[in-house]
Image 1 (cartoon, chains in turn cyan, yellow):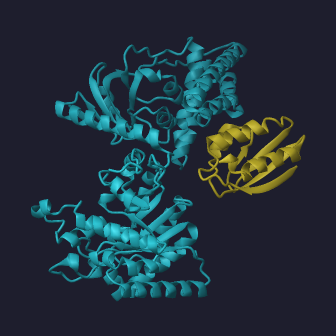
Image 2 (tube, rainbow over the protein chains, first blue to last red; image 1 turned 30 degrees about the vertical axis):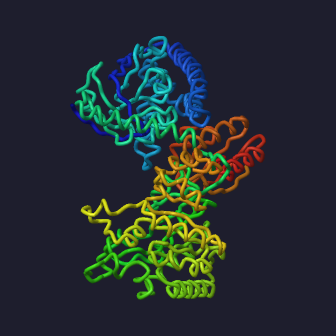
Image 3 (cartoon, chains in turn blue, cyan; image 1 turned 90 degrees about the horizontal axis):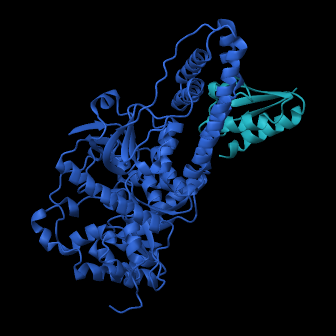
Length: 546
Length: 88
């Protein structure tokens, strides 16, 4: 087995035999010609033929990949009719008495060099477009039709590079994947691959082409950009499994994207996503989550070597809020301590960090850190639909202090003339048994509760979740936990607050029905689980007694 | 001759698609020469290669000049395309 790596441009797995893409290479010889007009007429005829071919390709692309992606071929036609380009060809024929093939090839070199030398990677990639149209003219000057790469079976197509027209002309039904030695992810080939839903890896490097032969089995992993040539059994099995899961996941996406989270009897629930950084927003949207139920703000602190500034935090929050549009984004304030240590906080070593100086306890004793974060959050609130959530709450007095600090922050922002939203929702994590038990007292003071089932489990069952020896005692479905959740839900609803679950249990589909019966309003899960939970919700009928 | 200065709104600058749209529209004014002038580059609005080679980026100030038949209409159309961000 040999492994090569390039850049995956469309995530999917393909397993099949290799077919090396061949094209007829036309050797260009410089010839002296006498009849200038005849030579110019040859160029004109070849150009017209090229435009007619491109028109056909454009129509095929329109059907296969849609108008936005087909447009490239329209522009190729424009390039063929470009005055500068054509003048350059005619001038060469006239002044140097050279043959058409040579004039086109030199012109192509000059124009593509001009693009290749630009300081912008997009424009650099346009050199390939110039070469593509020029090669077409040269082919039409020298011979007739475009050589088709006839393939009898479904193959993994490997090439040095593929031009957009070569890509679009590949018979989709006969291509499992394609792999190119060169090319950039900005190339139209990459863009077309994504739209044709063909796994593709580009820029694998020259060595790859020299080492492969037609007919050898290979696996292309468009996610990682890996190509396994002549894979061993273990790799084959692993990738077959990955492929099956991938297909399953895409099927779910196709079936469930855009659908409501509604049970058979018409009960609705919100399914949001948990994220740990700004970059995760992409997969939140891809997986069609209704909002962000838990944005862990710790990454801002963990990735820094000193306290993140208000500006740094503001920018990160604003970016997420803007990307999510009018969907709700719930950001949890600093939750370090215990298992998430940060050096510059200079926290003392503790005997029992899970029960120690952490999260809101740090924020309330070091209000300058807390206020910086709250200012950043309120400033960002002007850019979307923000909820702020406080972790590790155990008492009413903590909540009173928090709300006082929030009011101070808002007053300061107002007097500084800085905008913030008046509709920011405030909520708390229910992750200590204490909070669940006094949820009747806490609920009137907040807009929402969010149950953190991981900590709630460890605190309720007195089980350290890091200790694998006691795993069998740590029953996450323990009745005590479910009762605490149900109690919190009832108290939330009695006081006009909503309740969500953002811990691991939210994604446990064996409990989805239980949560729905409790009246849980929102489940927040990893982006990859959103559709799985939606699928479960849509299969449940609450009108039937269990 | 008429002219107007506009700012490029397209995030990717004047890449292939906007260049193509501009050329297609400007070719409808055969008796008029429309030019795009930036601080350091010039491009004919009917020459797709020139426009792309000018590498006009987002935020760049572009002076559009139109000279010839129907110059005002040609200028208005070009300005409209730039200001609409070429429909992006």
